[in-house]
Length: 292
Ligand SMILES: Nc1ncnc2c1ncn2[C@@H]1O[C@H](COP(=O)(O)OP(=O)(O)OP(=O)(O)O)[C@@H](O)[C@H]1O
Image (cartoon, rainbow, N blue to C red; front, side):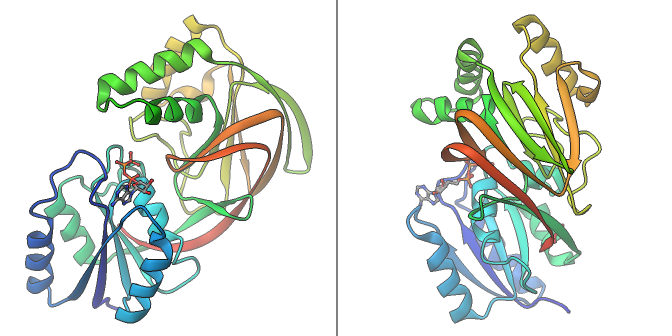
């Protein structure tokens, strides 16, 4: 069925991108393609409820997240297993999911992709029955790095690099017990990733060969490694070669339970979700209809 009523959900604070022309660009493309549209600006407060209300008042058949991965995740939460479709105009700093779906960073081009309306069903990982991951989640090192970055006033690549190196200095390994695929595994790890997608927004390939629609996700264990090997592992990740590293184990699963010896910081699609001693993850197959 063709879509006709588009609700654009705009995060005015995402990324560093200039959004001054966005309304004009949306108006022009919707007029050209004969689509009705409405706009909603997020505030950072109770956005999910407000979006639900607006969606029901306007009777939207498509919700378009204009922002980064956090905005995409927020909008998606109103759409699981529904016929209402999700579109993306990538306007965040990293835009990991848009990158994975090969949606162009340019606003006009991503609007054109939207108008073509090709729909794919993608999986979502449900975490602890209340968080939902469309892209990548992790416990440990990367979540700590996001925390360090968020606590810092500075922005941009230099600030990101600073957070990376300060997290490297403080990195630690924790004991985990993991239940998956009918087995239990005791492991010491610096990071455990729950991966629906293949790469971080930086371009580092963490999960080569992954698919967003295969009804499973990957559990990726990063075992303790000396700093000198971490440099080569980082390089391997940019070359998509990570699975050959002796410090990395990758398992394809439909569900998993992770018990941490000490509470570990969790991040889901770039948003911090507090410290946890237990994490339960389950795949929701084909839960979102996405236009890409
Ligand atoms: N009006 C607003 N003012 C302040 N914060 C907001 C507002 N609207 C949304 N937010 C916050 O923005 C965050 C999501 O940002 P988003 O992930 O879309 O962009 P980003 O962080 O720049 O991009 P990426 O995740 O791709 O790196 C959420 O934490 C949300 O609460």
